[in-house]
Image (cartoon, rainbow, N blue to C red; front, side, top):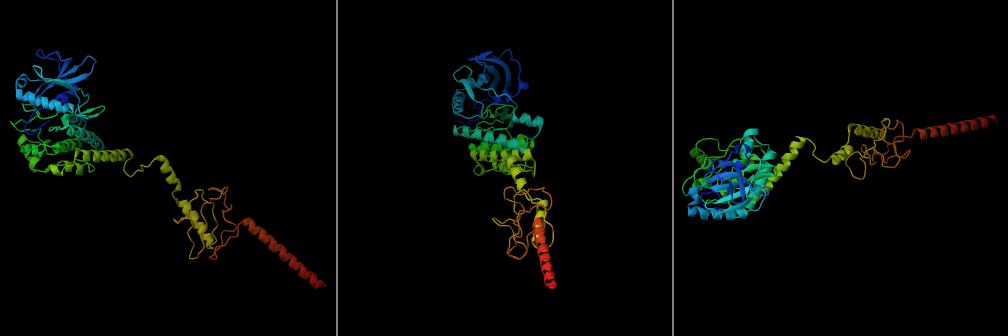
Length: 435
């Protein structure tokens, strides 16, 4: 397990970095071995502070990134014992977000180990070539990485050098590679005797001070990595190593280009005090929520209805329209005796007003207004010819004195009866006068 001051790599300095960069593959040199253990070597993938990384394969064709330790380090017994502890810790890591350790030989003349070959570019290369990621993309990658760190920390390992070039974007999701810090020289690694120091701009303040590293150290580095993914630049800018280290310890990160959805969480990860940073589990859950919300918003666009189609259709059907309100008003006017003729009923079956079980009252009377849509089976629907039955009982009166719309047929019947009765009365009067 990594301990403060060890300052060496537990898996592979630049192993995964080269493994994900097809452009970095080089032919084997004359001094390079052709076979290591049960693996046949095909290409050089790169070289780091600990040794050379090769692309190899086993008899089944499984590809690996295999690192052979430098001869001078192989002769250092202290290094061998520390390296053995790191490899043992790496074997305990269980999770899909790390480059799995496949094999190792710690007793060989030149110790070596092989990790899973991860096809795909590094996060650094993807951002450099294609520009910053969207909030949804950055949050999704961050959620997977933080979930992977949970497994790493449970195995008792602290990465200590998490950065965009140590994250590979494979077709199956992001992968964390290059555990630990090289204590020898390296192009992308600061080295000081007795102090574990990582890449400027991505290491935590406690690493700069030489304090103990904890899982919170990786959280800081992940926050800086997410900021880079969202902005396309380091949150601490550029400059010499000394300048960058000073900013990490004493200055606040610049997050102006980070989307609003991510900025508060990224800023929490970059807190100077390790106790103020979220845990990897909290980070994973929060980033999953942000990724889901941002993906949904990006799919539908701002202001669009994201409800399921069936639900949207039902809501649109039941939603009152201007024509429905106009018909309601005409019925209400007829109930008040204004003489307005009733129009055809709406077929939606919705009542006017928001009351449950009864329609709104008209005027100041105590009677209820007629419904705008008939719930009785067989009633006329929207679009029926004017003058049709409005769906109310003929001649029904409201308790407030207002008449409901009259039925034309009933009016004709009453008029006929009235005329007949009048004629009979007149004929009776005329007959009486003749006698």
